[in-house]
Length: 244
Image (cartoon, rainbow, N blue to C red; front, side, top):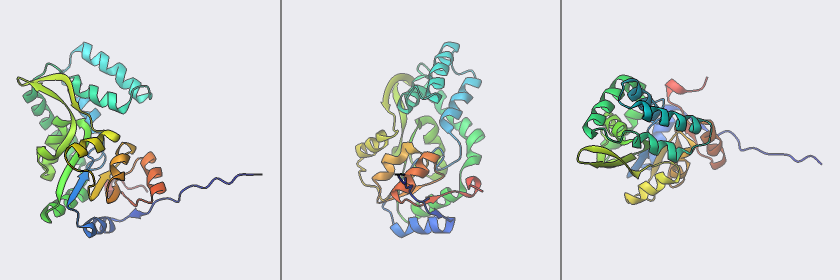
């Protein structure tokens, strides 16, 4: 006897007007946003890594070590948690001020043009309405803290991959790597266990989306699209990344 396999229906796709209306209808007190792929297209984490390599900021030994591990990550042999941590630790011995200056130049020249205007406008409207906005990312804090200045999100509301700084120098001591369940844990440490609205683009945001009063997958990856279908989450695509 043949067994019929049923699949979840494709999730509802919101227009920009519907997306903004749905968010505003919540009147969220707290809204949490992933960053890469959610606030802008592309991966600023790996982009910054390659950019700093091209700029000669890392030693050949550090580059070789990172290259092996990054290839292992792409092959599924190194976890998201491990590679995101190493992509911050690799700058051990450099000055924190140097990293912040590099992040400032990198984002302005390589990624700022990829910001989704629909998300920038939404955040501006939420801030005007009094919503507390948080950014959570597994990309390094240097890049994310610089990036979210474009959204008027202060550094004390950024939860990103970071290492300890000692006497102005970068160490290899990990403080936090918010990814997967780690995003929920980072939010809990900040006192946020049930945010009103959460926005994310990948399966690594799924745990964070689960704890929201309403989840908003934005520009969802294939894996997150499947999860959204199963959970009944409506999804949204900014115009520049909308499927044909």
